[in-house]
Length: 151
Image (cartoon, rainbow, N blue to C red; front, side):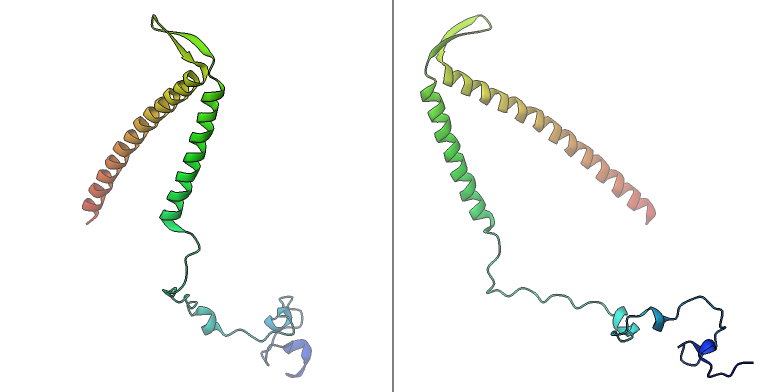
């Protein structure tokens, strides 16, 4: 029989007897040597939340005003580029549309075609948004009905 202070029996468990052939490592054996045991209560406490931002702090983004100005500047640049395109492509071209014949500068005709394409795209997008709105309303009504039956 081995003595209670035998290192083979205690193996660093604070005096608790363990069989010598137990392969499970002790918490002390798995912990790095330079760290202290963790306080369980400290780990269970919620982390301290960040304090509310001070009123004197400047926000990182410029906000809606800066976004609006950037959009206006980009829009003005696009308009200048379109104007240059129309001026450079002023060669007259003959067009037929549903039996009507007319002459337009090529740049103007291409600009009108691009505008027509954007309008068609907006129409298709609007129809899809309306469909999604109907679906959302229907799902909200179903959700309210389920909530009423669960009460």
